[in-house]
Image (cartoon, protein in one colour):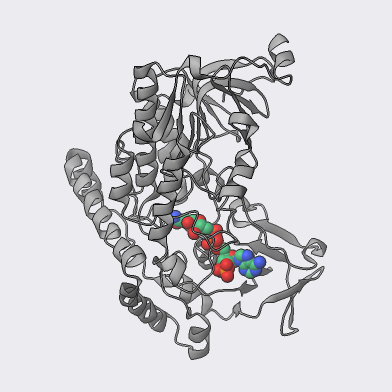
Length: 513
Ligand code: NAP
């Protein structure tokens, strides 16, 4: 696989894209399809695939139906199941990259460390672990769920057994017969717990908050269906549309009228009653907040796994970790050989460890800290010209396919790039007033949503209880807003509007090298 040699000399490109998950690849493919060739895709790892490359824990798969959780321009008639497993989704992404000929644009082993806006030149200086690019536009597709979050528990550093996060599953570590602690009961844990429960000697599942779990309408896609989808793509499109509207209708309950969640709660309680005969266990698995406040989980094998004799649901908080054990608040000490963290991701931080410096030396992390994690249409931030954040603030979903949102954002970026070229602009920058008005609207709309009113704590909200991750509405509304570059909300900067040339001391020697 191509990887860039260590260099201090910049390579000039029109667009630099960061990441090769659904966002980065989708962006690259759209650029290519529009006839653009002058772009690079910077990837930290040595292979493509983003979250579907990184998450390979047992049982990993998508909890959104695959006919919908895929690019609109590349339906896959070969999905083996309604909810495809990770390996198939990863293979699908590889297939897309190859079919649409973007693999040659990917520079592997290039972790973006910093990006600095050059006010005189009108481009981004993008520095990676191995190289240096100058790009007129920068599109980040790093995803919100790529940086593991670890719990801070007293004594955790003293533990002598094996530990790993669900996203960094150690397949070489043989769990057979071991005493295993799993911390967390979110979307990842409910997928891997049933897979390992029969193998391990003892499984202690540390639950802080019980999730709502509903039945998973999964099944194999029949050969007949696959053949039909191949011969008659419109049939697969009809299935995709039906799935979209089925999931989209749930936005009514999430955003408009959380009381409607009672219907789904009834279904979830029925599921629990059917699968868990033990009254006490059932009680401990019953959430005390409104369904939808946290991600709704779908599984048919999670509850049955918890009824096994070797599985122990622990609901007392963890007080301390010792060299070979975990002690809970009630003083109970459980000896374990391994701890698996199913503790999720740093999801409220859309830029990860990258240092992004915009106009007047503004640091994006500090800007987010001051103004809140906000962007216009979840994509562009005032003070940061020609920077686009895919899956940026308030673009996440609790009810439908993220690929739909990603494709909406990509459409916005594509139309913006077109406008820049057509108008001969050096850069565009969203107006502060437009960004503020938009975010005012977002946060007014989120007030009544179930994430804010449902009585739970979740990664959807930041430390101040503000929803910085989810789109508070219908996804078709987001698509409508992102269809065209809304010029009136942007400063349109021509070359003569850019600041007089001031060459950064840090950059000059590198260029001269
Ligand atoms: P998550 O949903 O954030 O769940 C983390 C779990 O760890 C929660 O149960 C949380 O408890 C618990 N936890 C965190 N810190 C803890 C601590 N200090 N002590 C005890 N428990 C602690 O993470 P995830 O399961 O990895 O899923 C993250 C997101 O990834 C999902 O919401 C979803 O968007 C995505 N995902 C999607 C799929 C898919 O099929 N599409 C699959 C997996 C993941 P609390 O609830 O009390 O905070």
